[in-house]
Amino acid sequence: MKKRVFKLVSVFLLVVSLAAVAACSKSDGKAGNVSNEVTGAAKSQTDAEPTVTPAADTSSEETGSGDEGNSSESTEEVKQEPKEVKVGDLPLVEGGIKGVFEKYGMITGTCIHPGLMSQTKYTEHILENYNSVTMENDMKPDYILNKNKSIEAGDLVVEFSQNTLNMLEWAKNNGLGVRGHTIIWHSQTPQWIFHQDFDTSKPKVDRETMLKRMESYIKQVFEKLDELGYMDIIYAYDVVNEAIMENGTLRDSDWRRIIGDDYIWYAFYYADKYAPESCKLFYNDYNEQFKTQHVVKLAQSLVTEDGRYLIDGIGCQGHLYTKDSIDDYMNTLEAFSALGLDVQITELDVSLGTWTNILLPTKDNLKEQGRWYYELINRILESNEAGKTRVSGITFWGISDSNSWRSDRSPLLFDRMFKPKYAYFGVVQQRENAGFEE
Ligand code: GLA
Image 1 (cartoon, rainbow, N blue to C red):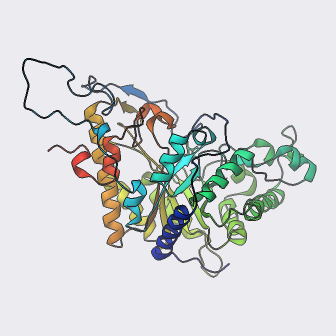
Image 2 (cartoon, protein in one colour; image 1 turned 180 degrees about the vertical axis):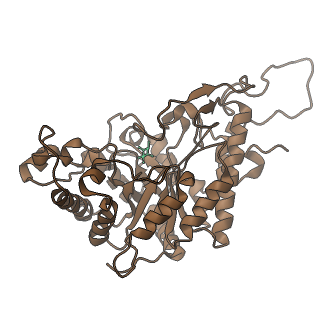
């Protein structure tokens, strides 16, 4: 495959063409899925379960949908003071969230799951606001590797479920791009793939066998999606997810134990061999601001003998907190961009507080979150324009706090009543509504 070169222009063209397809194809807001799936998945970011600490002001919870403001009425005294407008009642930006990023040639995504797709209010919201989707679970190894067929074939067999196909079809019919997520991961991956005869009571296979299985698995992912007619909408794929620990060591997964430290190189080598040029190949990780140099080193090692990159981009999950340093995060985005690779924020949500000290959704904390989102997005747009970063897309990890995997930390742009938060206005760069003091 020819060398992949990052071009902002090509991303822009993709956005424009996705928008064009969306405009041409009629959205009926329906998806074929009915299964009511739980969002999110077990996650291993740190061991300790965080505690929730109430902040000083707990009376004015949530955005405008709750009891914010004073609702008492007096017929005798008509006060002249204008009634405070609740943030949740402010009008949404025309053209949706995606309209804001489109101006900068950036893609805007969210994650989806079958439960969401069965409700028109959600599918319509997605089509209004996003031009890309990632499946929260349905393209993960657990969901696409078929045990019985693998045993029968004596080789790993990839089979996409009807739920997955329905969501791909919906994306295609509505002109959305898709981020493929994910192929090689330590989590949500069946144990049987590592054992002789796909039988967990038997010993694990050797390096050569596992490499053969890996090649076949990766080949089938791309070939089957191509045969099914979806590879033209899958513009990026997380080939490897979460392989690096914060101390710089490689995570001790079965992939690594059996194949060795070069398993990541092989994953990209095979992906580069079988993926079409139009699909950018990503390494994706979390807490990227605490392992920046380790990720940089890994990316630099993912080259062919003649120095050609096998990787196209680095995905920063972006599961962040309102007390995190935006400076640190920007430094990370700059360091990744300096490699000449594409950079995408792939699972953005900004929880209230810190990992160990989660704050309640008081008005003050939600305002702080609005300001935080505003600053982050503002700095990314500015630094992209200045050529310091190459962030080609931002995917939010869900559409509202009620269906977030971190629902207890109110990390998203819409609240549980599906009303916009300060965070929303921060993202769409309406500074005056993003929680800054007048
Ligand atoms: C990680 C994974 C995602 C998802 C989240 C939790 O960030 O990359 O696929 O499992 O955890 O929703």
